[in-house]
Length: 355
Ligand code: NAD
Image 1 (cartoon, rainbow, N blue to C red):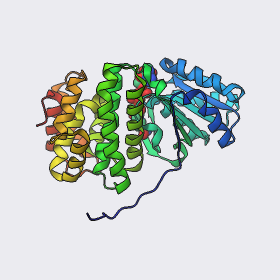
Image 2 (cartoon, protein in one colour):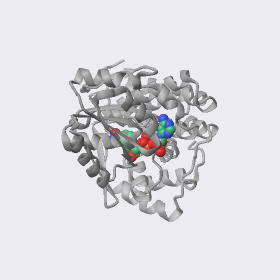
Image 3 (cartoon, helix red, strand yellow):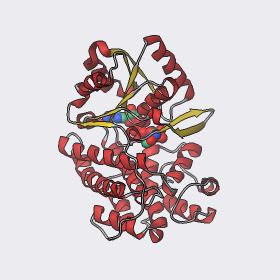
Image 4 (cartoon, rainbow, N blue to C red):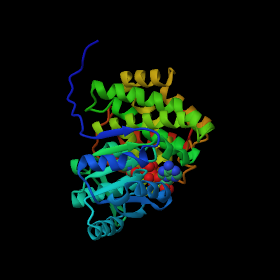
């Protein structure tokens, strides 16, 4: 087999993966980083887990701020910066899903504070240098090394409370990162290994997570898959699938993980003719000969939404969304015209098998 040309940059993130780590590792990580006053941030619903992390930090905890919201509204980021200043924080611990970690990243960006991330979903933000802040309904995003967590503490016990439906869609969100990384312009041999294993781990774990959400074994495997998929997201540039989801979330306010779940099989089916090696890797991971269909089938079997109509999109929205998707430049293995974007969106809207 030929080795493709590639460039790969490893990111300086320390990862600790262990059941129970959330209440032991953050203090150890703070010690390694020389931090003494950590502000713990989380969303309102995540306050219980964050309180346990804050308590475990003891005198290293400078406060608990439970204001994180989806897409990091700028006024929440502003207020959190004030709270961090007032508390004399020299570091931040973000406990929660992409929303809480997004708020931690906003603090890291604005104040230069080192970030320790304790993820409780499979969204993968903890492994990327991408930040986002929403102002006047528009989400600005960017990449900056300052927001890359210094340490990530993965504790599968924290995910036991993630509702089964959200576990499944969040898992598909993770799979989408790995799938697009397989055909990203900046993919590399290590990324393809992580991507295939990430998809295998996540998709094999999800049926067991859905059947028994409080079993630690499947939860560990799913979180391991999320780490691999998030690492792929952090290392590469995403294509059509992520662009579509960005438009659907940003303009139509569709829910993040559910939208990824619905769109992924159709975006992959569209790109499949241009990326046979990526599809072969996905087929291996899913033990199938038709990865887009297998993902669609898995989502349905686990009770996840399969159509954009179910998520509240209307037929009229399709044209607007396809226009926005085609208008912006992003790397994709197949050219995306407005007609092409509309084809994918219409299929996702109807929710039929992408076969
Ligand atoms: P989220 O963080 O908003 O969490 C979804 C819901 O689940 C929330 O109500 C939360 O309180 C709850 N929740 C989280 N963990 C839980 C747990 N263990 N038990 C019970 N409830 C729990 O959603 P998300 O899907 O994790 O993240 C989506 C956000 O993250 C979006 O804004 C997205 O743009 C962003 N994101 C950013 C990146 C990046 O690289 N910057 C990557 C992925 C996602």
